[in-house]
Image 1 (cartoon, rainbow, N blue to C red):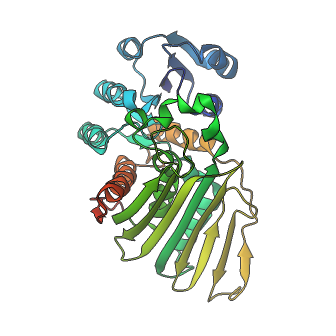
Image 2 (cartoon, one colour; image 1 turned 180 degrees about the vertical axis):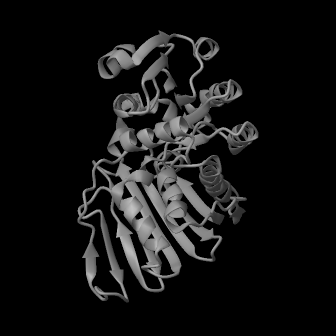
Length: 346
């Protein structure tokens, strides 16, 4: 299957997407559009013969090629018209988040995708991490009973925000990025909260701040309280607080036990069950935690499109997460509870 990669010099995670496409068995041809030619040489080295043609115009690639899947990784402000053009030419779209600077923009794209029976998939690669899949299965099997509550944090380094180059980057400008840490990193944990538990977030309250005081127009700190459609409550704390690396946690409590995911720690998954052969014991996930991240996620997306099977994330799930993010932003601005209008996906 032919895949188009539409990006530019500031496209995010291209250094991960190129080897992911190289490894994807159901992708035998890649075409690249990069107006800045930033990634052309990298693409040639990583993709080899898989890279068949390069363009300096996104519209020219779409006019000349007929890819079944377009991967769009570009500044959020400029993403919507590129995604729209790809959908209109009949391609499924894999989009680097957030792919918009307002909820209205993404809702229009999601409606367009669904009207054309195409997939619009956000790049939430943590879904396919082994510990995520194991935790999701455990919850589906009722191992920890009915889910009562969820507590999450995803904390990265403040150090990156002190660099002059960061201050001028698109993701440090709200008008170009749509938001800061919440829409860039916190969004992954919001998606996982719904994906792991099989629920959707229906209400949110929140607050945001630039706690580090760097010369940026986006938040480096966000907190939210969440209500889910099964009645449970949850919380998220996300921000740039550290000198380096990450602190992460997704802890889920249920009527028969609890589990905890720490994607950057070791072990990455622990749990406790009130019943069963190992009741009252702390259990540790001891299976392999590789491969993880973008390579297996991209491979699953490519295979789903090539084989006409369900992708690892749906258009509605992508939209639900952005509705939650913008619901938190609205709550932070108004001080009121926001209804997210998320739609359950069963």
